[in-house]
Image (cartoon, rainbow, N blue to C red; front, top):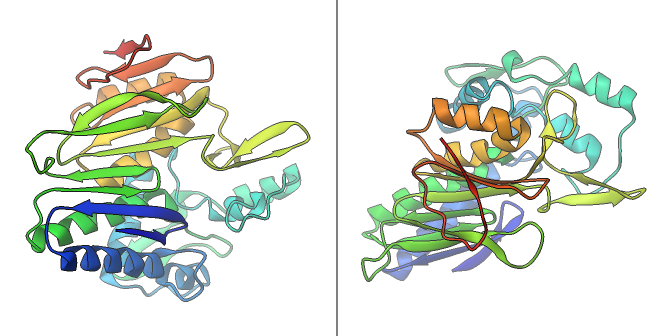
Length: 299
């Protein structure tokens, strides 16, 4: 089943009844309508307008986003939406903001300023949330739950840059997922998974050029500008779709050294592959990457 949601083309391939695909597709649309900052009718847009009351589901996801922000030291931050709007990444009206505007907006961002109390979300005036950094991960996890409830034991979901597997292939073998090379149409390598996801973030995915310089959509919450951390792409392999979605962004913002230290502190939760701006490929210990390129193992 191929369809368009969350601003990207999505594909779900499942071994089972057609009704399971219907239910999974409907769930993605439901989540998109609930959590899209760009959809004025969504709960998230209402929060951004100042209405603090949300469903328990939305409150739980915002809480999870804040927990990941805290864990990553703010490298992932759901409050960067005003900055995304200033750069035009929210609606495609790309431009380079003046430093004075960025300075003003930086005073209106920061995950520490958001509070969730039951079903009430509160934050200072001028703040706005964007859950795009975990939305597709959340959708993948929910779709797999729905597919399982419909009796599906084997499925592969491709939601933009997120690939997620339910079980193994119908023949019992592992799924093989390719990681794109940011420099061209080839691949950095492949990983084999079951009941895991492979999520990639890179500056090559969404960007614009102005006056000979490239500006990508992954912003550093500390500067308000595209993250210049030395990373070209970051791929996360994990059983937790939502966390993997956020971490692919966070590790890109962190840069190679901080990313390696973060993985060492959380090695039981995920594996990672990243390519640096100078062309060096890194793979965390315990993750098998099939590739013809040389790479270094992070221990």
